[in-house]
Image: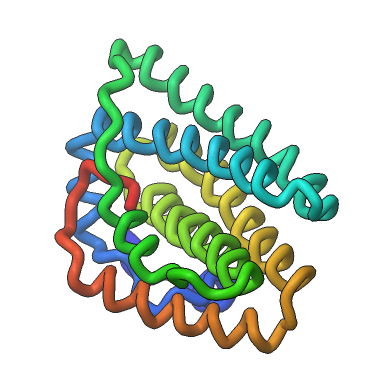
Length: 204
């Protein structure tokens, strides 16, 4: 199993800490839980984009850019749902997403509308970046060739989503401000990942 994230991917994602290689082994023996959690991640991504459009309806560039992402993320949800059905599995109950909740704790409390908007974009970028890195792990580390290919498709899509949210932030906010805050987010996420329990029943 390839346990090292490539330098190219690291440069794209900017993540400071790669996933513990044990995670893939744990995920492989808990595939039903991983697929269920993955399905809900895609569902939440779609509904969050809808919420962002509603809250920022005056930002037409954002509306135009996120509208197709809603469709894409919901399509991903249906793909994972179909995979569960094919395996004779059912969509389990949604679980508390500790990773995302911890990220939310780092968001600006109060602050200006621009500061709040910036953090909304960057938290989405970070979730997409970590998802991409996790899907890369699965696409390289699973024994099942079909599932490796299954997750490679998701990996490629999430990499594009990460850059979209960064670009949206830079469209509305000064680029230096975005990069400074993004680096703060990356440092925080590294600490979060370093202290998190390695669990194979979660995408994050």
